[in-house]
Every structure is written in C-alpha cells, then in structure tokens.
Image 1: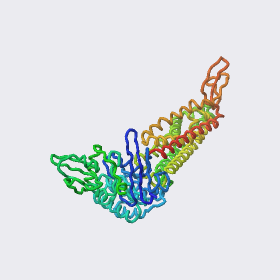
Image 2: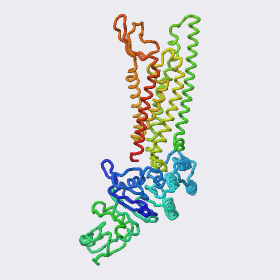
Image 3: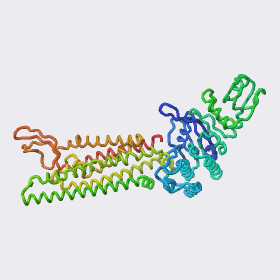
Length: 301
Length: 280
C-alpha cells in the first residue's frame, strides 16, 4: 500500500555506536520520484542514515522500508538500491572499463553502454587505472557505475564533494533528467545547500543525530516565515507556532517560525525566507530550542 | 563473483605460479647436487673404501646449505601465502573502502564471502599440494637414510603441508575479517600460525610415540628411521626409549591434516559470520 507512494519510510530508526548515537529515532517519508537533499552538519548522522538504508549497517532499533521492503541481503533488494559511499570506493589498480565489466558480472540489470557513453562524453579515460585519474574523474567513474545499475532508489553520500562547479552542475542536471525519464528516487547528502536547491524537491535535515525536517522543499518554503517586530517576548508565538530561531536586538525581535496558521498580532511584519536561511536557522538553533521534527504529511492532513 | 575474484587476484595467482616455478628450479638443482655427491661418495667407497660407513653424512653434509634452504622454504611456504594473500583478502577491501562497492552490487554478502573463501582456500590447497609434491619427491632419497618422521622432515612432505597451507590461508582471511586492517591481520597470522604448528608438532605429535626397553647401543638406541624423543638408561643392560616410528608416518599425517582442516573450517565459519552480520 504505502510502497506505491513512498520510496523510503523509516519509523524510529536508531543506530547506537559504542558510546554515541549515530542516529536517533529517525522517522522519515520520502515519496517516490523525489530528489531529496539530505542536509546536516558533519557528524549529524547523514552517512549513518544512508548506510542503514543501503543495508550496509543494521539499526539498533526501529525499521526502514525501501519500496515497502526492509533492507536485506537478497538480490531483489540489492538490485533496487544504488549506493555511493563518500570515499568513492574503487579498486585503485583497475580501470573504469574493468569496473564496468565487474558490474556486468555482479548485476542482473546493467547498462554498460550508458555508463561508457557518459564517461566518454566527460572525457574520462576508460582504460587507465583509476588511481591515475583525478579526484573528479574518479567520482564520475563511481557515479557512472552506480547509475549503470539502474536502481530504483539512489543513495549518494556527498557525491558533489569531489566535483568542480561545472561537473557539479552537469551531474545534478543528469540526476534531474534521470528522475524525469525513469521511476527513480534519489537521496543525496551534502552541506552545499546552494547547489542542491536547484534540483532537489525534497529535504531531510539532520542535526545532532536527529531529524529536524523532512518535507517537500515547496512546503518548507511555504510554512517558514521571518517575523520582525518591536522587541517583545516570543512566548505567545511559541504557544501558537514552532519558533525555530529568535534573535533579540535592542529594539527589535526577529523570529524565524514554522507557521500553522495566520499570525494574530499585526505588529509582526511577516516575510518569506530562503531555504538556506531556514536550514541555517535550524542548524544554529540545534539544541537550544527543541522544536519537534516537522512532518508535512501530518500537518497537511 | 568468479570474474571479480579472478580479476582482483590474478596478480597473486601469477606471482604464486612464478614462486612455485622458482622453487621447482631450486629443488631440481638441489636434487642434482645431492645425486652428484652421492655418486662421488659411492665411487670413493668402492674404489678406495673411504667413507663407506657414513655416505649419508657425506652426501647431505656437503649440501647442507642447499638442504636447509629448501627446508626453510618448505616450512615457510604456508605462512607466506597466509600473510600475502589471506590477510589482505577481506582486510584490504576495508582499507580501500571497496567493500562499499562490492557489497552494494547485485550479489549478496553470503555469496560474496562463500565465493571468496572457496576460491582462496582452493588456491591454498593447490599451492600447498604443488609444493608438498615437490618436497616429497625431493625428500625421497633422504627418507631412505633419515626417515620421514623427524621434526621438519615430517612437516614438509606427504599430505599434511596441504592442510597447513589451507589453515594459514583461512587464518589470514579470518584475522583480516576480524580487524579489517591488513597489518594487524598479518601480525596475527605471523604469531598464531607458527604457534599452532609448533604446539602441534612438538607436544601433540609425540602422543603417537611408542616406548620400549632396548639394549643400549653405542650412540642412539632408537630404531632406524624413527624420530627419537627420550632415552633413559635404566641399567647397563637396558635403556628405555620413546620414539615415533617411521611406520606411523601416515597415521600422524592423517590426524594432523584433520586437525588443521577442522581449524581452517572453524576460521572460515567465523569469516562467514563476520562478513554477513557485522556492520560495514
């Protein structure tokens, strides 16, 4: 039932490492066909979440569903999910061409032609050992490999980090094209909000191993507002809405809030906020205020 | 999986083949030298009656360096395979991060680990078997003089070296799966393999010895070709000797092969568990 609408659903997903939480009580829904930006500061749990979803790690508690099924060591699950780790894992001494042949042997579905075409267009040599390629070229090889699998869910951990701005734009465009052409859902982690805003239509925000936001970007933009007014207590606002961040200047109060209805007090001047500002507000607010995670699906219902 | 394993370990296989070819050359040269000295010793004995009592001493004494080199090689061969090929098999993937690539393709970790273990242990058996065959051939004439059961002579011929090699490989792989780092895996293999071999050879193998009272002979009272362990002079007429007789060569080879193959199986099961259940 839910598998038809949701590509990814997690409920209370948690991962505990020896003394710290990698991820705590993570409940997210990612509808099919979205390109979701997984944003958060270093150590927020982005990699943990992606590795749990890819089935490389097992949760301490909670569960994940990928197209309705739990990550597991079976060929159907593995075929449906593509994962690219942050470190861009490739066999250093093997060439891109050899990786493509290995992939052809390890996967039932394998589009080597498209990958070769992509790499040739990017002028990445197919015959040279990958250790002799530049960091950007290696990233392109790894991306081509994960795309060649034709997965239905694509999990990319910091795929843009090794790319120059031009390759970044090219790569994001090809991702966007891919989601239009075929039924694929993408989650890519990054801290480059600016780059992601152009192609992503969904956002998962993690701070300190917890989910702070998980919603379509349009909804996030719709519901967050900057309220500016004469200096006063934010208690009334906090009772009505979720205050993400409040700054008190000498004569002025600036409040970034998540609204669930009209602002009653006309003294507040309400204005729209950009995505980057919203994300930064959540990140800087971090532990000082404890706004619960926002589920747009629940709020809209 | 076979394609991937072959592509990743092709270099290992080629180097192993070259090493086996080099060892073969060394053994053949050593064998020719031994035959040559034997020929001279027999000639001297028949012509001038010199050195007839100690032909073996003359033959193997004059080839001592060669002989001990070959023996050292034969003793070290399983360990070399365990640290150079076994230890990096899983640990090397973790150090390079390539398990993230291989474990997210369309092949389950179950299949991945079974294929890797299967081919690696088969390669170890082939390597161990090839070397054991060479060293058994090389030891042939010496067995007639010294017997096959003394420590080191026993350890480099027959079937047991195959089991030792399979064990060394399984040990390297399991240590790599445990630590996920190549150097600790190599160190573990370097310590554990010789320790298990020495304990087995020097403390377990003597359990198959026989004891009897014999009339003391000048020199050793042990029967010919046996591995003498203890001798107590009880009186001027009797000596109590404990030794491993040459006739028990295959019995002990069989038992030790069994022990090392069971240990290798246990390590392979650990590796399977580690790869299929631990977080990556």
